[in-house]
Length: 128
Image (cartoon, rainbow, N blue to C red; front, side):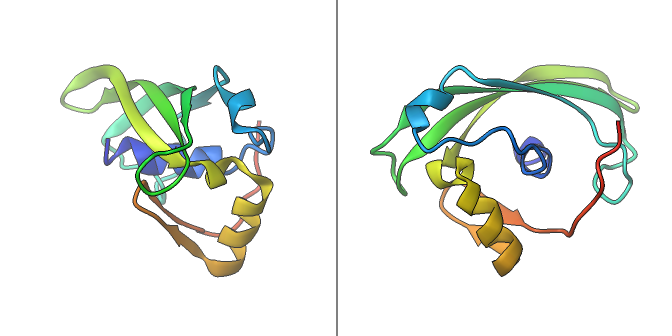
C-alpha cells in the first residue's frame, strides 16, 4: 500500500472530473489509470501497469474525520519479479474529493492527515 498510495494520489489529483460536494454521490465511481513511466515519478523496476480506483463507501464518523473508502485494484509488471496484482484498500479524507482540496494543496505545497500525505510537485501538461 505504501507504494500504491503515492501513485494514486499523483494520478488522481490530475483528474478534474472526480469531485463532489455530496460524498454519497461518489460511491461506486471508478477511475482507470495507466502507470506514468516518467522516471521522476516511477521506478524503472516497474515496466508497466494499470489500476482501477473504486470508491466503495463513505465513512462520516471515521477516526480523523469524514473519509472515503477506496479500493485500488492493481496489476503491475515488475522487473525480475513478473506480474503482481491485487487489491489494496485505503481511506482518503472526504476533503480530498472537493475542488478546494487541490486549490489548497497548490497554495500550501503539502497536505497531511491521519489518512494520507500529499505533496504538490508542480504542474505538468497532460498528453494523450
